[in-house]
Length: 142
Image (cartoon, rainbow, N blue to C red):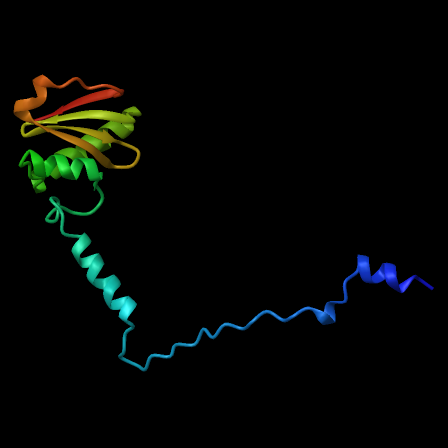
């Protein structure tokens, strides 16, 4: 017969372990009621959709830096400008562009092509004063 002292050390008595507490996952809200969290989430989502490209279709993203630059330089990204940028991104993807300079009649944009994200924006009057680094492609969209 095996030594009970050794068995207790090597093989713990599982009947002495405490059971996991159960979690109640049932909905406590009545029909038609919404939680406070859901209403806050819905409000935040509505407000986050309001941006300099609010009228433009979804798909093109703005970095925080780009949003700040658009506001500082009084640049608006209307549907026409959005369409130019989306078309440029489509062309750049076909050519393998990663970090690209897109120049339109209104401004210049540095775009992270794989992520469809505008990284920064420069107004047309300031383009000559800037040096663009770490880009692998450029496209002119007039």
